[in-house]
Image (cartoon, rainbow over the protein chains, first blue to last red):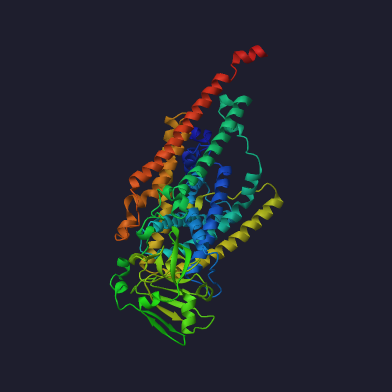
Length: 418
Length: 172
C-alpha cells in the first residue's frame, strides 16, 4: 500500500491533492481524535452551563445593585430596609464568583475539543454564534480573575477595577444571552432525556457483545456523574472555605479568605486606615469641628464634646464591604435626622457627607432622603460601647442601614444639606 | 481564539429548527445590544494606558487559558489516565483539580499581595496562609483517600459476591 493509499484509507486525502482547507481539516481532525475521554460530553456541558448561567446571572444582578448603590441613577433610591440587604447581596456576589471558578474551568475543559472543530463555521448563524463565544469566554475569565484579585486588594493592572469590572460584566452578559439563545434547544433536549447509550461504533471491536457494551455504558454514566459531582463538590468546598468572611458562624473556616470578620481593631476589619487616609493628625486635633451647613436655617459648628452632649441613639448595623467581608456591630451616636431637625432642614433634604480625608474616591458620600430620615442612620461616636478607634473613623463616622461599606464615611467633619 | 468553540445544535425537525433559529437570532440581537452598551461604556470610561491594560487582561486571560492552562490540564489528565487504574484514577484526578482550584483562590493571600498593597492595614491577609492552605488541601486529600478506600472496598466486595462463570453455567 502506497502512502497515498494509506492516506485515503484513513480518511485523509493523498498528499498530491491536499489543499490548505484539507490540511486544516486533517490537522483539526487529528487533534480532535486525541480527546478520547467520554467526559467531553454535551450532557455534562449542558449541566455545567446551566450552573454557570445561574451563577453569572446572580452575580450580575447583585453587582448591578452594588453599582447602583454607589452610583445611584436618578430613578434609584437605596433602600434602608432590610438593614442587612447589601450585606446579603454583596456576600452572594462574591460567593457566586468564587463558586464559579471551578465550574468555569471544568466547562471550558469539557468543550475544549470543540475549539478544533473544522470547518470553523458552517453557516451564517454558526459564524455569529462562534463570534459571540470570544467575549463570553474572555469576559468570564476576566470577571473571575479581576474579581478574585480585587477581593485580595491586588491590582496588577493599569485600569480602574470598578469601572472595568462593571463594563466587562455587561459585555459578558450580552454574549451569554446570545449563547443561551444558541444552546437553548440542545440544552433542553439534553437535560430532558435519559443519557444516550454509547454508540456501538465507539466500542472496541472485541467489546461488541451486549453485556460488555452495557457495562461500558454503565461505567461511562458513572464517570459523568462522578465528574459532575466532583466539580460541584469543589465549588462547594471553596465556597465553604471562603464564605466565613461574611457568614459569622463559618468565620473559623474562612481559610482562603483575605479577611476574617472578627480580626481587626475593636474586633472587626478595616478597609482604609487612618494612615492611608492621611487623617492621623486632623482626626485627633482639638480644633476638630462637625459643621452642618447648606440649605439650612441654623448652621451648626460643634466640637466633639458638644456632639457627645447631644441625644444619643444605638443600633446594631452591619458594615458590608464591596470586597465581600461583612460584620454586624453595635453603634452609638447622633441621629442624622436629629441634626437635620436642629438646623431646620427641609423634610425631603439630602445630605452630602465629607470626611477629613483630603483626597480619595471615598472621602465623601451622599445620603438620600430615605436614608437621612431613617432612625438608625447615625454619626457614630462609639462601637460596642467604646470610642471608635482611629482606623474605624474616630471621632465620628457615618453608619446607616443597607449602605455599602465604602459609603459609611469615616472621620466625618462636614454635612452639606441639599 | 474561542471563536471555534461549539457548533450550532442540529435541531431534530424543521418546526423545531425554525423555533430554534428564531430563539437564536432574537437572543443574538438582544445580546449584541447589551454588549454594545458595555463596549460603549468601557470606551467612555477607560482610555489610553487603562484601555490597553484592559485589552491585555481581557484577551490575555483567554489566550493563556486556551494555549497554556487547558493543554496542560489535558496533558496531565491524559498522563494520569495512563499511569493510574481504577479505583485510583478518578479520585486522584479530582483531588488534583480541587487542589489546583484551592491554589488559584489562595494564591494572592499566600503571596501576601494584599498586604503589599496596604502594608499598614493588619486586617488584610491576617492568617498564616501556608498552614491555612495546607489545612484545606489536607481536607481535600482526606476526602480523596476515603473515596479510594470506599471504591476499593466496593470493588473487592463486588468481586467476592459476583457469581463466577462456572457458577452461572451450573445454575443454567
